[in-house]
Image (cartoon, rainbow, N blue to C red; front, top):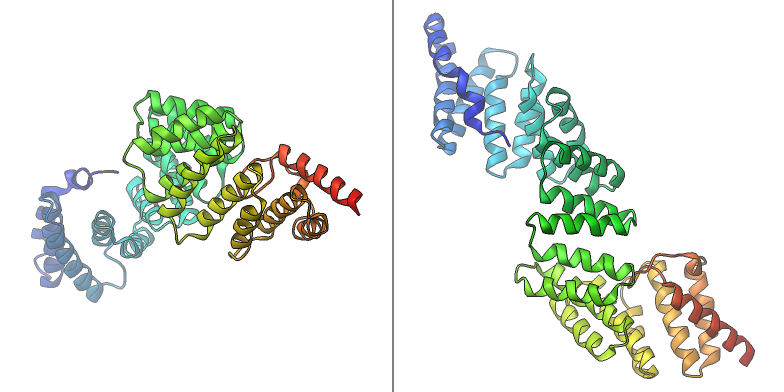
Length: 383
């Protein structure tokens, strides 16, 4: 982010000299003096005073000319950006840009920053691009445009921006964010590599161990995934959502190595943290159901699954739960019920057995697909 003082550096005394020429029109003198005072207040970091002076300048200028006082609008937008008033910043910066005959890098960059802060990622991208057309090697523009691409799902475009940013400056945030992109496109080895680089460069916050642990779990490296989740939970800096994810994903990893009681304990902790969130409640109930199935506690498994089915779910999630119910009923000897579960499962998601991505509540891991096929055969033969 460009300091406001640098933007104003070369404009100090020239403006005062121009005032002498304009003293014949008092109104011009007054709006210009408010603008100059506003700039002086900005240098002194008295932003509220600066905002007031710039507003007065804009008002007087608008009363005299049928156009915008683009410099005052730009500076007021700059202040709004710094103070978190992003909608106001967008309004001023767009107006300044539309009337500025020679907009520079800052005109585009500041507007892009305001849109980014408003989470209007697709609106921010073209302004970061315009800024980069003026300064192609600006690290912040490349990094932030990459973040915008990531946030709306343009993962491959984000990777290209992070690649360019890495050539300008080595920064652990860039590797961390590129790792997130690789995870989203299922390039797990590259994701782990980037997370490792970020950690080696000094990124020690717990969230990176959560993300790396999830990737390791997806690659069936469950023991090392558990170690990462423990590191994350010991970091003491996790937000509640990441803490819940760490516990719930740790639970799944424990269960995959046969430590079902540890899995249930960890899952309970995750549920307690995000007790009112449907997604995390669903993950917890799936963990419970899976553990009870493996422990041959089929009634407990059915109770957990029935609770889960009461949540607001997508068809894919419903299919997964019905698959677990069918599996539980098959192993418990309730073959007719199992067949009903499987038939309903295929109605909700006809391609549930064709997917290859392992996840707690989205899709079905390969080992479980085989169990479904076995269960279907058993249930069919029993009839």
